[in-house]
Image 1 (cartoon, rainbow, N blue to C red):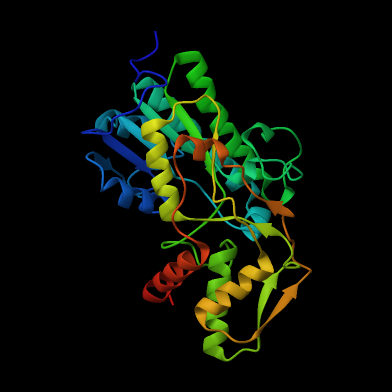
Image 2: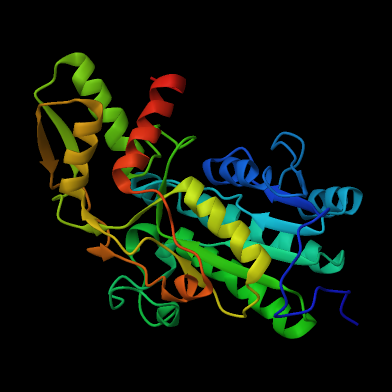
Length: 320
């Protein structure tokens, strides 16, 4: 018999609930913790050195002790194109293990609600733009991030399978490219916005004539400020209970070249750009169709200019 679950399709009341944010020290997890602090609930977390999410027995024991009633799975091994191209097994194994261990234990312990965080890279490289949820598994993935994408797809499908077989109120959502306070600015593993901020800041400090930008600068990308994502995730946790995944995006896109110029404006760098075409572009375009989420009543609040200013301020205060 399936464990007692919240009624499917009904609003989920967070009042008084213990909400575990898996991955609370990451950029997304820390933003979710900030957002949950405004709710009448009890956010719970556990540091990585106290719980290895890749170890099933450890996950089950910790969850049995803490007994979270809701879970947001923001924990993941992540990185940019370089990291995806050199750490294939790690990206696949770590993310598969995290998903299977948490979702399986949640079902066994009767967790009332679980939200698994996917990624826009789950969609095929040549998916029609903007990418709707129905595009999932309709074609080949982008090779530069397929290992991470496969693991995320498996985690999302696992939530769906546990919903179908056991009646669990487990949902999944995927944002587009994220950025904001707490981002990873290590050039070996970072995504495009933190990489550009770190490079441009250094170029300004060194008096360099140009900043290196990977690829042609022509790919189109959509960016979502991490605190907007956190707000969307809490919104979905309280209101959404569908079998399929749901997109989280802004509906706005910009070329990588124009993004580099925007970052230069925020940093105050007046030099040029050196587009390294020996480096990969990645997918030519990644724009999500977030119509379903908008119809549910949620839209983001932070424009790209405002978000870049906040991200650069955090970088200077914490890492520069």
